[in-house]
Length: 188
Image 1: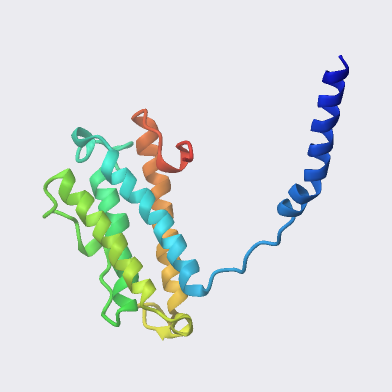
Image 2: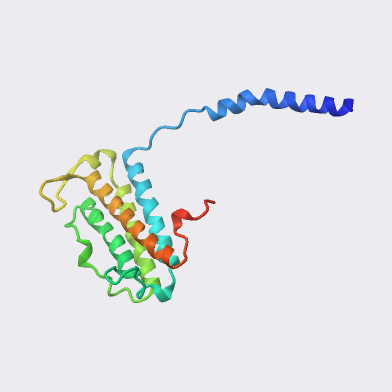
């Protein structure tokens, strides 16, 4: 019994001695905020990777046939629209005239593999355009086809939001088909 009490006292002492260092570790200040380029890139890639995951794992047989309501787009049409829209930002960032998302229907994308490759390319091309910007370039005024000029970062965040809105729509497609969307899956 004395050995058990002594053992428990030693363990309690070791725990108490280590407690202050564990408390200090928990109180460490967060690192600095990322610069503008990396902040935009993180958000672009976050939604982009969700759309890629959806393109990869939605059932082949429902790609061009499933829509949650008669007036809705098919899964393929919705994901192609969401990712083709990314070129609205990418073109402007690269100094080109912006393509509008409804100008491309994806009719040349015949298979699921074609769509997956297209989605990956849209996300990658946008990420590359973001990486090429210096932080000072985000404040540049650009003509995005609206009633006034916009800052380039506004165009980037507008497209990130647009992609997120379509991700939300596609979650409905997933849930209606008994699938778990990327954001709801257990984190590794």
